Amino acid sequence: MFNKFMLEVGREGSVIRELNDFGRQRAKLLGKDSVFDFSIGDPSVPAPSKVQKTLVALAEYPDSVSIHGYTSAQGLGEAREAISRGIQKRFDFSMPPELIYLTCGASAALAISINALCESGDEFILCAPYFTEYPVYVKAAGGVPISVPFAQNFDIDLDSLEAAITPRTKAVIVNSPNNPSGKIYSEALLKKLSSLLMKKGEQLGLQIYIISDEPYRELAYDGATVPYIPAYYENTIVCYSYSKTLSLPGERIGYVAVSPKAHLCEELFYAIQGAGRALGYVCAPAIFQRIVAKCEDETPDLAAYAENRELMYDGLISAGFDCVPPEGAFYLFIKAPDGDSKGLSLRARELGLLIVPGDDFAAAGYCRVAYCVDKDRILRSLPLFKQLRESY
Image 1 (spheres, rainbow, N blue to C red):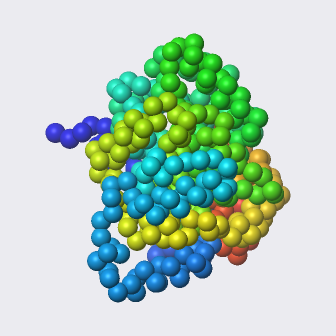
Image 2: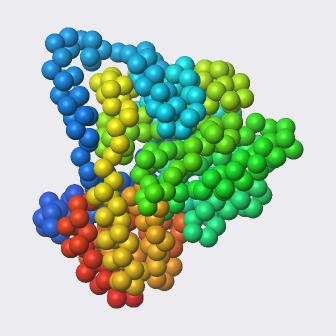
C-alpha cells in the first residue's frame, strides 16, 4: 500500500532527533537544568549582526509582495552572484553563477546532487565516519551506499576506498570538516584521493564524481585551513549550507555548485535543476536568499566554539575518556570504554547527558558530543561525564 522504503525510514527515525526530542520532554518534566543536550548541531552563537539587521530591514520593506514572492527555480541572480564572488575571493576559484543552484540547506543540496547523478544501481562511496542521512539519500535515489572504514585519526582509508571502486561507482561523498569527528582532510590527502579517482576512472572508463558536503567549512581552529576540493579535482559538486556559518539552521538555506571543470558541466547542472524540480526543491526560501545576497561574506564568531572545544576535550580527557582532538566543526568523538557506543549513550542518558551513538555514523564504538552549547552547560556537565566514566 505504501512505499516500503519510505515507511521503514519514517518508522526508524533519526537517532539524533530522537535524543533531542527526549531531551525536550525530560526538560519539561524535570526542568532544563536536568538535561545536558549534546545531541544536535544547533549553533549556540547568534547570527552576525549584519544578518539580524538585514532580516529586520527586509521584514519592514514596504513592497512585501516582492520580498516574499517566488524566485526563479534555481534562485535569485544576486544571491548566486554573491556566492560566486565569495568563492572567487576566498579560494581563487571561478564558480560561475550559472552553475549555482540555491537549496533548502545542505540536506536538499545532497539529495538533489545524488538524484541528478544516480541511475538505478549506481554506487556511492561513503567515507566513514559520515552523517547518518547519507545512506538514506542514496537509497531513496535508487543507488547503493558503499561504506568504507576510516583510517587512524578518522582520515579517509584510501586503500579501502580504492578496493570499493567498481564499474558501478558514480561518486564519493566527502565531508570536511567532518561530522561527526571534527576531522579536516589535509591537502595532501585530498590530492592523493584526486589522483586515485582519476586513475580508477581512466582504468574503468568512468566519470567518478566527488560530492563535497561543506556545511562546516568556515569552522576550523588553530589556524587550520580547509582545502577547497574543486581546486584539486575537476568532477566536483559542492553542497553548502549557511546553517552553521550564519547561525541559521532552521531557515534552511544553502546551495549546490557544479565545478565548471566537471565533465559535461552544463548537462550536469541541467540534471541538478531537473532533480530539484522532480523532488519539489525549487525556489529556496526567498527572504533568506536575499540575506545570502547581502551577507554571504559574513563569518561566524569562532571564539565561543573554540573555547567550548578546549573545555570539552580537556574535561573528557581528564575524566578518563579517549578522544581525538577535533580540528573543525563543533563535534568530538569519544570512545566507549567497553566498545559499546549504544550502551554508553544509554548510561549517559540516565545522568541527563545526551550523546549520540556512532553506529549510524558507521563508527560503532564511539559517541558524538556536540559542543555547540553555552559554556556554563559544559562546565556543569563535566562532573557527570566523570561519573559516567567511573561507572565503568
